[in-house]
Image (cartoon, rainbow, N blue to C red; front, side):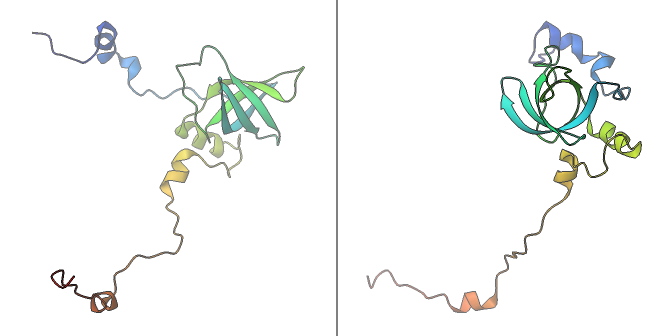
Length: 149
């Protein structure tokens, strides 16, 4: 008897496929006319505002083969292809995972000050407010008799 998987024909094909399991990808380095950058804002319509590590802010477009397959969020590190005719625009050609970002930091390809989403989630910021009950609060309680009202 066939098990209900909650999916169709493609779900069953992907179940035992080794390509869907996590395999370490080959690290992609930049070449001439490419630059590393970090996403600072999502603008919609597959457009992003990218803070490139050469110090410039550019408007980036997600290339067609990445659309609806690779999801890009704020603070993700990406590889962009620069345009010769427009310095303010670029095309996103690769998104780096957190492990790959750490390897790029170790190889001094990107600055060590780059914060990823994993780094931001690990730190719990203490703003200095403690919520503690004191014994004085119990003494100040006043009993109200509803029969007297």
